[in-house]
Length: 524
Image (cartoon, rainbow, N blue to C red; front, side):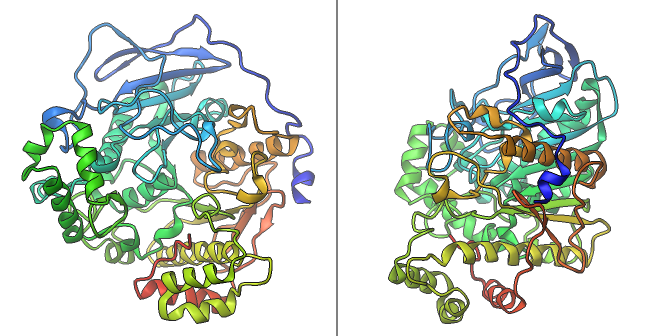
């Protein structure tokens, strides 16, 4: 395998357990006050720094305001609370290290910074936007620890942003300032980085935004948002390719979002946002449940960003096709089993169940889809279909972008199966590449991590750090990764490293025909 050939000198075993934080604490002066961090294993960490005022009371469902200045030195030695959500200790493929824990609060708009110890100037910056379907997640999730990447010569910043019905409110009252409050939080955090990262030794002109799942969707939206112009110079999108250029699949039009917001407020027994601001979170949660609130729904109440006409254009797909977006180098990819943890029938061999899924998802095109992806005795066709849907959408987005961009895109498919509970069932599941890219495999002591996992992690970090530094993942000691280009090149990252098989043109055409007709290609 190519991986062995290229990584014979890579780490052969798990990294040693880190030492406890030293008594040394670095002090940095920011625009709102002074903060002190903690040094550990060659990295200075600053956790839980407010980047905006608490969005509570009168500030609920308003654009983020600057944090109030503080006196003295703020001890930035622990994470701030996660934004309000239901905390779950484990969820199928996602064991504890993939999930938030601890306290939640509306007062949650904080950033975390990791920097090489003693670094003083001009380091490139990676800003991480967590996933969670815009309903859950946190910057404090264990696999998002930025220390390992920082040790490789970059600064890592992770951010919290408002979630659920607190993160987007499509009331007509919000039209003037926009109702995508979670995205406005992300933009406020990027503005904080631009103002303050120099104090940590970072270069505000070399900022890469990166995210996975809802975090990758957020990166898509920030690429489209004129409010984010000038705030980043590179972008990494991990498992956010379901958007393609058909952005309405995950981004409701303003009128649809406003109708669902109206249903939510009515269920809460109020008519205005000012009245709703006086309600408790429990009262709002009860009202949301009454109207069947769920991510992306277009009947009842919905959760997530929408085309508000302020943060995002009213016709985002048209803006993207016309080149009205923030143009930067891009790295984009997906995992081989995106749907394994999201669809309980992902590996089902029940032919009737599969046919019902095809009819529900593809309508009149279901028979044609089944010809390419037939149900076979004792074998599920859904994994191949899910994977090809992702490839079709990734290629569609990337080819459309190439008509207007000045910069390359580097596409990947993550195929390695992380060892752990039911790994045969979940495969290369959604999010499973993240601890490899962050070098945080040691956050999962219950998983039988092997030498090959650490070699892969070393490779992934090399690609990611190179891209943050230069806009190109290639570098010394790494397999050559070609840009997407005219050949639709997708790099396989896994036990095998090289060219991933190109999607059959006939399959690609059929799947895009479904998408162009308004169909959903998120095949789970």
